[in-house]
Figure 1 (tube, rainbow, N blue to C red):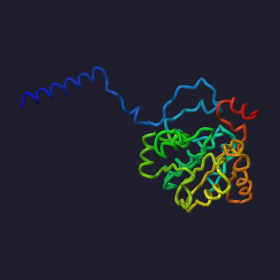
Figure 2: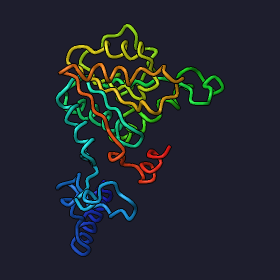
Figure 3: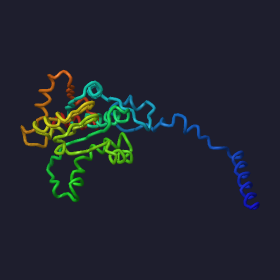
Figure 4: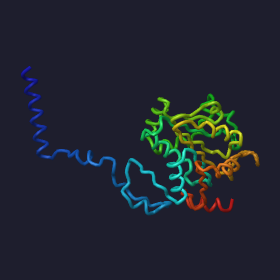
Length: 263
């Protein structure tokens, strides 16, 4: 017993001597301002170069990169129903999901409901392996990507397991009343007029709904998409925000804006 105590005392003495000789790890640099680190500058193209000069953080801040995005974020903050229309690459889905995560984290809503139509764009889901959830997974992947960019994938899975984040096809929304929720309807240009009318009337108390889509990029037959008609009718309603993004709001590679202009 005495021998083991002597051995432990000797180890402690050696540790103290080594600390004095080589120095002790200063953990204060990790505790103080632990969320902010100067990240290496990016050499590639950026949609807003002035944003690259600021100190970036692991906890991403949500900032608009165009006037259209700023208008969309303001509309979401001040309206319970917002329609965001615009071409690909304008950040419609990302901003809507980011605002949903922000509201959930702040306790403004109790859950997030993300929905999009499972419309085939040249491929048939019947040939995909797995059950219905596995077949629908490729259609819901953009929503997972936006979520994982704002939260860690581990946290996303935990929130989904608790029911605080729900991802569902539009076909499963009929008959529901969504209270205390932030609802994001993505790819709404692939919804018919009747489907959009059904979706918009799901809005319940203390809830916010953002509908995103590009009327020019529908995978439905011509004349079937109801997004443009719905947006035109709701523009006259005072408490509903309708934001129309343009090519100048595209924040993807500059070639995307060039292609949108000629295709």
